[in-house]
Figure 1 (cartoon, helix red, strand yellow):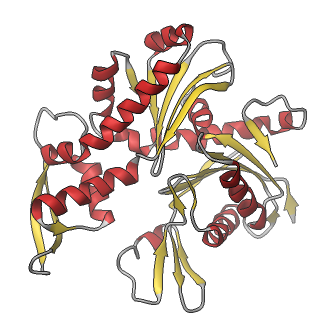
Figure 2: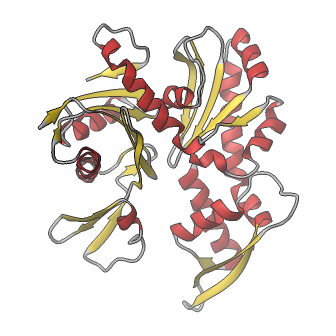
Figure 3: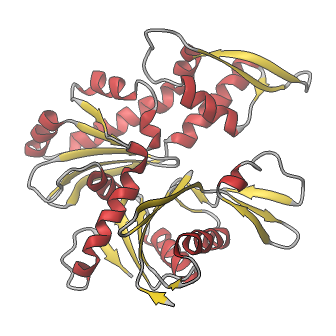
Length: 338
């Protein structure tokens, strides 16, 4: 048996990404677990479990054990971590060292829940890194220099906004408006306007295909299926990108306001750096069409969507594995060892 493998985990609300040192990202799966309520047995994890969302008999439930970027179901999270660790490690590698990213606004209690779950899942040592820091590293920014960089990391459960300089977050804010809330806003809008109820997966498909936060030059449409609330029967209807703009406007505005509030508290010298260097968007939620244009219009600052935005946090977490040894001497910034 082998010891000593180093693994980076982007423990996302919607998706788990696993980075193995020396190999890169080796696994990308939905953060969903299907369990049998009668026996408490795990039936499926990841992609297989996601297929069961909204489609399970009474005794089987598909659970997303992370909510708003933190653990909401400790036992299921532990089982999910154990499954992913064994999947990437194999049976001959035991007790890896784990680097896990957490939202910048998590409490000490929430951090302890992550650490305990990882330890019980078989980790030898657990390190935490803040999501904006990991996102900045993954986006290729040199965060060690004395100039300001602004990161807007929009995941599934939280949006992390941070101004980073000299390896740490000078100002940061975490708001619970992100990809999941976009989906919920679309569900509420279609229910209110069309009297039709749709599922989470359909809402996510709408968001990805025609969702927007800024008016599109060409209106796009998409046919969807749901259940009519009056008749209770299945129904098909056409949704336009203009409707998604209306549905998502409130959530997009909250993100813009979050960026504003962080900029208002940022020291003038760093503000000048940001106006020159721009705002970097990372995370899957940041791929919402037109969000970069809306931010640019409202702030007057250049906005860039990072290359491979979905993987930035996982890549940054993985790169931080190279500095684990610095932790023993306390030289690594904003990374904690437990």
